[in-house]
Image 1 (cartoon, rainbow, N blue to C red):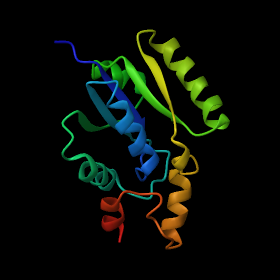
Image 2: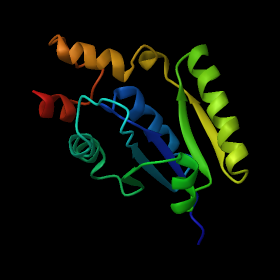
Image 3: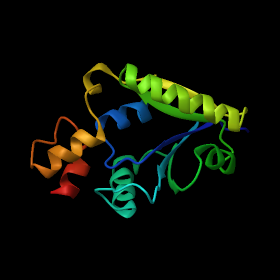
Length: 156
């Protein structure tokens, strides 16, 4: 049997309710979803790779269709290694669309066998971004509207 898998790449620093919504909806289309935590040495993260993996694992520990992996380098190369032909991306607004469209076109130039599948973010999660959430964490704001309760507990 040939499983249809997709890679959902991101820094997930931290994984937000918007990300979780995209993952859950993508499970309706794919047999397996790989949450791929990208590692970029040029980027400064609030949470270590280990912590980000722990947050994600605690949320999806009972979901057999989800794998959590980390990677460095090009996403299309990671997809090829994982034998996945699909990349999942979420779109909150026009700015996201412009940015993600260019990346999708570039990825397709690098590997024509890999397609990007876009999910519009659910309306109640459109304003959530990891950058905004990090600012709320730093300033000790209410995280309930933005993060899963497991993540909030781990942070506190």
